[in-house]
Image (cartoon, rainbow, N blue to C red; front, top):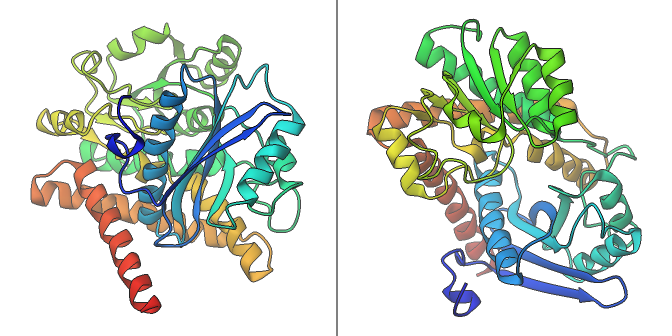
Amino acid sequence: MSGTLFDSPSFSNHEGVHAFFDEKTGLKAIVAVHSTARGPAVGGTRMWNYGSAAEALEDVLRLSKGMSYKNAVADLEMGGGKSVIIGDSRTQKTPELFRAFGRAVDTLGGIYYAAEDVGVSVADIAEARKETTRVLGLKDGPEASGDPSPVTAEGVYRATLAVARRLWKQDDLTGLTVAMQGVGHVGGYLADKLAAAGARLVMTDVNAATLGEVAARTGAEIVAPDAIYDVKADIYAPCALGATLNPQTLDRITARAVVGAANNQLATPEIGRILFERGVLYAPDYVVNGGGIINVAAEMNARQTKGAFDPAWVEAKLSRLIETFEEILDRSAAENRPTHEIADAIAEARIAAAGEQKRKAAA
């Protein structure tokens, strides 16, 4: 990335970008706060062995904007933010590193709350919690929400059923083939649900042990990582890395629908338009995978009201999210516009309305 931070195509009017370094623990972290219009910025912490600081910056900028949109579409009173820790999560993690990260987050004064993401566990967040209250996704205490993966999977599953009703006029997945890319935390739960609903699964994952385990219990066929794009499937379900819908894979995917749990599935917005023009139904990723952040929001809710975690609140928000997804599909058909453009418009309108309200209140 050349030029300055403000020249980056991913710098989308971010409110703040904060870099933290701790010599003693080796912490190198970036926290990006995209918007606090709807409330404190909330988003996970990713620990990744980035090739460069510029690559880490680009990732955190894209992910934090995505969180603003995800939280707005899920109708949560939270803004969007994200943090990245530069390092190898398998070899460079220490309790001290995450305590240093907790101190860094605490200096932001509550404009950002961190949770788990790729490479960061509930235990890591618990270490950060020793230095700050501004973390979510804990497993202990009355307000703790625990692992959000099952709720994320449930949302993607319900969206898949909604798509099956539209495209195949059926209430389950009998006779449909789903090509699953990634069967980690969320993908594993999702695979169980899809198989129980009658889907035939074809799956891949870079973790052979996990893949074998999930395939054995769901009766799935296993293929090599690159072969997943060539599977003759009805639904493609990306549940691992982002940007798997790109110029190299587009012509290989023959599915009629894309419904998965991965973030940032479209390499560029143009890919979403091409899918739409080809008659492929794309379920906007940050809409259908919003269950996890709803679960995390329930923890913040409980903390603010000094109550306990409320599964009924999570269920009501998740049901409303799937209604929003159905509205997006209706509007896409009525307006002849790609689903991701409709979703973005809904998110942007909600963020803008909240920002306007905030400005009026401050005036």
